[in-house]
Image (cartoon, rainbow, N blue to C red):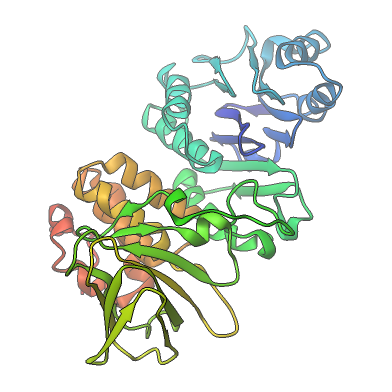
Length: 433
């Protein structure tokens, strides 16, 4: 079984996640290469692959051996060691790898803190270098996003010299899978496709819908049956429109039953609630003026709202807006669909607005991609298309815009005049109105 490929075994110790990402000109590579167990480690076995390296390697890690010791024992016990390639990351993030002398060129590996990157039958060593440097450069992002970026960068650097066929992404986390009763957080495979990585990039966004419902979108370390007390000042504010600052209360506390976030206007006369209706989302809302003094306008009617005022709106067609009468006025917005709650996409693209405006496209891209891992929404694809168009990544901009336009006719129409998309509008792949 010759699995000529490139892969990366890695972990995120802060998130207690281990995983493997792999691509190959080989049918269903995800059935052979990736192995992982939470709080134990991850193994990638390839080249003239010995599939037993996976379970045997995890068994050795479970006994307390570190990555170096595991690789040494696996290789020493295998008569076909010269044709094998394996990468291992242990429970503490230590990594080790082996590339046999008979592996087909180009073949080699790189290791670093929390990752082992390896490949064989590659165009060149740049592919493995891309895996390693991309993993190091994306620190702070989720493990799933980092590994997907690694595969993308490796393919751009040359990849498997025979081409592409299949790809896989495996992420494990204790109780991180469906309903909190599985350790498989993600097990995504594209078994036979001419562009498997691009197909794989779409999968994690939808896969999060399969996560345990009672923990969806909850920050790391937040569990039920606890009491959390914090002041609004402890939540980092994110500039969104003008001088308006948004504080992600729901995400910070891990609330899953309803949406709740805070807005602060820097100056008197600034909007503290943007003018809108809830017809698209179907939310009923309560606004609580926490500090300062605001004036609400609901369907043209003015409402004086000093600190302590509650404004409840159950009619989704009502046009609502609020303006600060004093600097520093803060309004808490609470809302959700009656009878159920689904996290709104704007919670993910709001944080990306300021870096996009400031030309920090790397940060904007990271925030939107992390959002797409949690929620596959057309507006997030659209915002990412704008970021990619502005940063000169036209092919990906068109891919993201196609996904956005396919899910929303409103976004398709808006794209026809959006200045952020001017650089790609003449491309024949641009979705027309």
